[in-house]
Length: 205
Image (cartoon, rainbow, N blue to C red; front, side, top):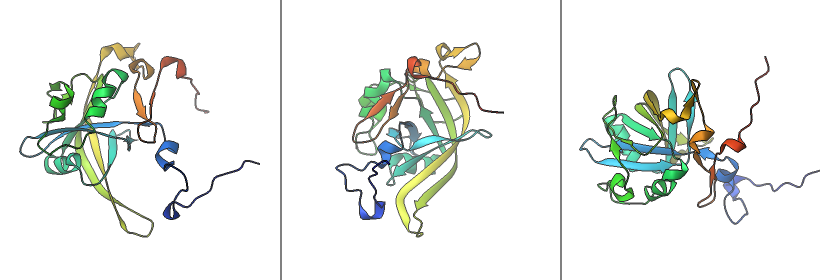
């Protein structure tokens, strides 16, 4: 029989580093561009991110603390998501720095702003895939006891999609050909998806 490390989160994990976000991983990165009502642009990565619905297509990210992205999206109801791949990973990491609200992360990371078509928020020009999104819901999380957590989930409907054509073959998007980078826990662990890592399992009928 396996020997399990058991713990109850409310009582502490008893390890050198909290394993929670390493166990639930790797996770796609929510690289979110937003703009406040005065026109200040923000670009920041969020490791709690995923897709939640096909029709309409909905994505969402969770922010620990009321950060600029959340504040901006509450004001303007729009944002973009940008795919993180190996060739922009270092620049993505630069945009995770804590800087004053007026600081433009596009500038400090050397990334290119490209105008979106359906929302008034720029996307990352160097990103191979971008989603333009409109806010659908913003929810403050809470525990089983009803106590509010210092975390907010922002959901957005994807209203426009930009895909580099090199990633489409025979009408199918090639996930691994983008070499996406995913968050893998601890303080700075990441994983890169490669074509040789892919395998297929067809759903039973």
